[in-house]
Length: 286
Image (tube, rainbow, N blue to C red; front, side, top):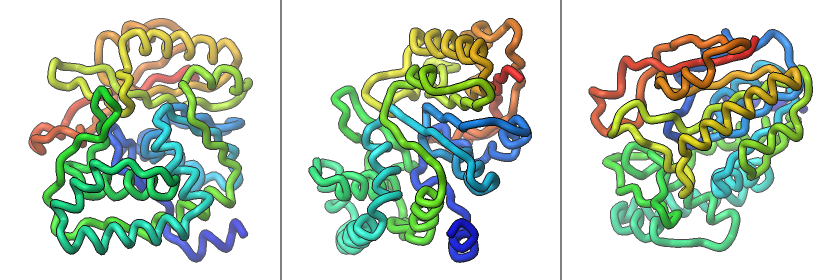
């Protein structure tokens, strides 16, 4: 089965566009992975670019992934378990969108479906058609991004969704909705934990932390730094991405942390000229 699905399907890629997504940084992240590790943990899952890379490159790799965003976690499990029904629902969205994109977009944005299929279908539809492909909720937890200017958005993207579904079904992947701190209970010596939290803002206007309706605060960052120390004490391999900010670097000044600056593009700035040429930090304990 594992060999078979690789021949039939395209390489799985992130199925949501997510602020801070790591697709462009995969070559650098791959160079910084340890040669060997036990279970791979990713407690801020988001779009899962590094997860898909690891699943594709390391056949049979055991993974435990999680996020606090329940709609996102539901999307992962729905794609794994109920792909045919999801694709049928997305095709219906696509047909209705083509008839009257503006009124249909805002009617879906206002909707609050009950079924798991429709919830996931709504998330993927809005992600494909909203402005800048940006997932953002307000203080009440409501998705509030306006319609994007697309002539023909790829709403269904069936080939990739089926590829994602197949690799999840063929792999040892545990998917949970939980706070990042829960990883301390599960991770053991030799396991790899990759943290990609909402970044600390580097300027007054860069404060994008609204993946869930609970902002990721400085206190959360402090809690994350303490968690990294505890994981290091257990013998886990830890790697962390964050912004090139003084708050972050000050928390990881001492051994065992190795801090390097890597060049990255900002993909969520509304001004495309400001999306290039900034640095972020890559921190690891090995």
